[in-house]
Image 1 (tube, each protein chain N blue to C red):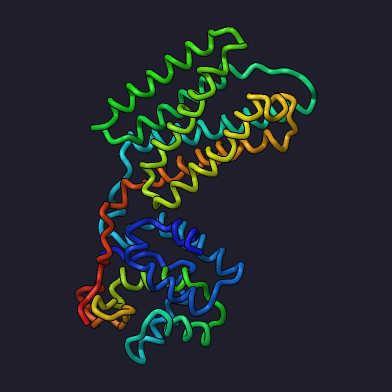
Image 2 (spheres, one colour; image 1 turned 90 degrees about the horizontal axis):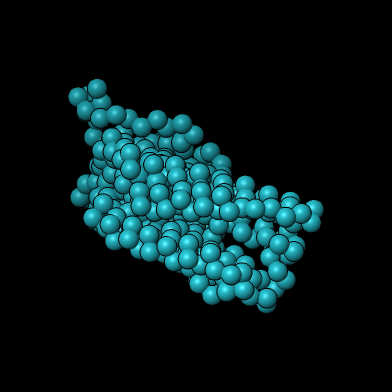
Length: 81
Length: 249
């Protein structure tokens, strides 16, 4: 799978991964964490970073939780190659 | 705020709108936050593959790209015409826009026909042809009789072409209404009122009034730009909220 370029979303994406290292979280929680770690970030930028991480299969989004919960994807060397 | 969210593609909204609204409700956005929403909408349109697997491989057809190109060209020519009209008006001279006007109508007709799905193109084409013929009849009428057929047909032709083309963009219903409403519904009644004598006669009206007509060209630039980016072509309908890696918790 082609990984999308992160571009301006790289920094918030990094902090999202750090935040998800503590466990699954909703977008609102991730927003608060990223703001605490990295300062101001817009809601659309956060969603854009989440979409790219999800597309890269680095994180997963649950379909049953409301609001949806994000978590780190299971690492698979084959999938990432 | 709903208007800004309406700028996002339908499938994107189906997937992320609730989360985005939660974030905005928790902390109403500043001006920078609003600009972030607009930039996010542009990013969403440019990267459909984030939501729809395989969308990056779907390129708009030549037909849709031609429609987008014609829409942009029509919008640019319209803006040039209106700018010239404002300048000419301010200097008290007269100018003939007949040829440029017909070229604009032709470009916009090409855009509308190109943007129309093939199965409906014939009906739309016949409608446009009839309107064009009636418009041509109106043009040759004596000046004092011109407003009778020409004015309603101006509304039908310019409003209809923009509406038909906008429907193919894949923008949300609200965004479509905003484009057509602000681009056509706002400036044309003013011009018609001026022609009817309710406002000073058009060529002698102030530049501010004439500049209202610019937004029609801007609307075509927006519609053409969206079509060139792929528009509804790259966003399947009905909207699919299922993303690439969703899992059951």
